[in-house]
Image (cartoon, rainbow, N blue to C red):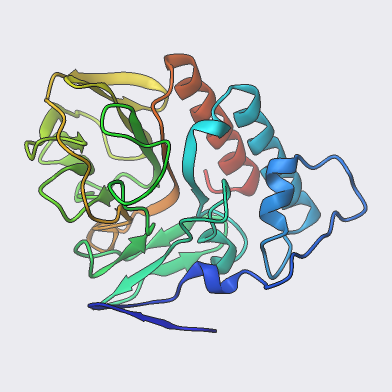
Length: 278
């Protein structure tokens, strides 16, 4: 497997897993969505017919709800193979890899990744830098989401950036949800009397308007004022080593409507249920 050496980190870039020549295949079936087919064509090893149908149903749901065109990064870590889990479903840009200064993350088939540590040291790096990317994600129109399997009390961070709490999600931190999206360095803390499992989505829809959702339902809002986009990559799976939880999915892009958030949760739930992750 090709290796790239980056400044301060060794990572296995998912982009190097993509064949030079597109792999056209369909199991003899023409019903897969174009959105899933372009993803299949970028895989070295095609998914099983059953898994392909789950991907196709998932992407069709996002297209129908008007979500697909808002996305910059979409990764379903809960899949059959670790290589495919790091390839961006939505487009060929922003292929994921690892920061592995210390330790290693562990992949479980049809569940996802666990074993993350401090940001920039042991995590999944999306290689999506909000300030450097020409993307849907912008200062006052932005969304990121993730699905965590397991809700141990020591959840800690599952999404982060290395720049002053500009982007952060810790679903259960001292009895609170700590979160930020394009923030000014100040975390927003919202009481969480439950655990840290499930679907979490943070988004910003204005200069002083942001919100956090859990399992498709609004959990809290904030008037925290936005700041310029962070000049650091978004990383995923941080602190999963201490909690033993797994991260099953990640996405980011432009903000969604309330109906689209529900649709994204429903589609992701259906996919994860189909592969046996939940």
